[in-house]
Image (cartoon, rainbow, N blue to C red; front, side):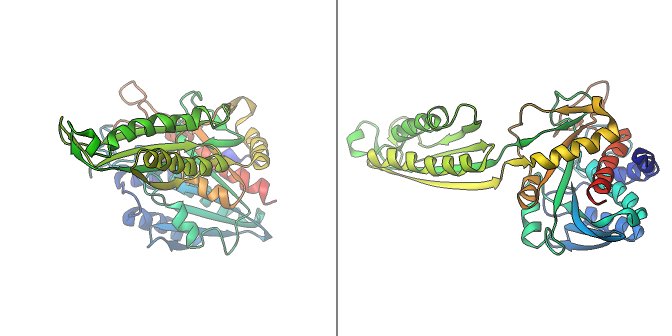
Length: 392
Ligand code: NI
């Protein structure tokens, strides 16, 4: 069966859905219009679903003709607080914008759902459709999982697509795949370095948190350069440091805030522990103290090696060998698809379909970002072929 022919039949639908969604961008975990729209389409397609996260997430279920495993397909649906400047006929005018292409993800998943529902008798098992809010912020995958999205029926494998050009090195029209770690964890740290304030001319009366912050800032870099294997990438960036009032007052406290990124779970927990030990140790040795708030945000996104190999064969059938690019390096950006991939083996792929606006390609999260809709049939076909091959 030629899957691309099947998804070509739903191309017009997908473009319409994408444009309708593009006009009504919503943010975070609050997607009432978007969620209602997707539910409306699922109703039309006769696909059963339930909602989670106060109605802002949707879990659809397609029953195959026979019993078998459960394959989940995921799309994120949220937009960004950017005023759109594409000049497109279907541009949004509410001050928000689908500037990361999640409208495309939702449209491709709906297109795949339509084809799968029409051909459900060919499926041995079930297909779960995960429509999630809040990928950009504050994360919608985790609350969905906590509310049971990956259970009942339990998901055996999961797959997701990011379109646009997250990884600009991939030429247009190609599919980027990656074995193992693909995207980094993204955590926030906040350090409160505590001392005692005094007159700048009487430093001996102070417990100086500014001197402590110099030492701590320098020492934290050695967690990367001296304690981490050089081939295990870690980013530790202090991006805000704040304390003090003027030239002759030693303050009582300094705040340091930053981001930590890693590509494996053990490194991540070790770095978190060591940031606290080093900061506290230095502050205490200088008669002060340090308090760390470590916000564990998205975990590293790790593709299952075996499933990714399986997916590669699937993708060769759909797009051909020459359209597949095996990424050598991961990216240090984050993605909350990572949570789903912690619950079930699977893979996340990049579909490179940027579209020019006024002769130039603009990056993700830019007010002139756009995606090429003619590739939706490819994304949908990758979903459909993966399901057919996994549930056969
Ligand atoms: Ni995105």
